[in-house]
Length: 261
Image (cartoon, rainbow, N blue to C red; front, side, top):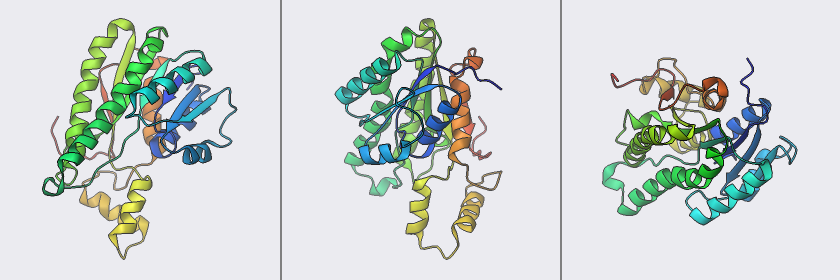
């Protein structure tokens, strides 16, 4: 199916790895023109090398917590692409600490990353999205927003706040023709889980370790997801074919569900 994204101009934060990189690749495959950023210039350049010509893919280092840097990157991206039709707020990571081990600095750092990782790019992109006529914002979130875990307390709380914020934004920005949706991922096989496997000291191989992890977490499909499976949901929501979808959440989590709603 043609998602009608050819020529659309999309900004994706955190595009150097994982879901962000998979989303960049999928958008390029759909004919979109993409701008993306990451904190490390070397990792970003290496990840994107050879994906597309410079006219189609713009990238630069940027920390989404730095308001001035985000503003400068967004303006440069919009200038390079000739405007913006979409924004994917993807930058972020999980903090695995129980409450007893979490400091006030941890709380501030987590909330700053999660909230300003959405607010800074959105505020910078809004004038361009308002001019688009078919703009879409997708906030990458996690099922932790609705199914919190004590070992990920700060991340769970921050994710819940972002889910609330996304719903509110969908209502406020609807009159401007800007759709806002969320994609909530479950356990996705990215570098974070590879590092946790390495640190676990498990006698199992990585595949068996993932299978045991999926069983422990109650994932109905019995496995971890992959970045492309998340990127598909993101790309579909950016598509003009999803023009009547806003304020919704798509869960990409293999059927894990510890809540009724």
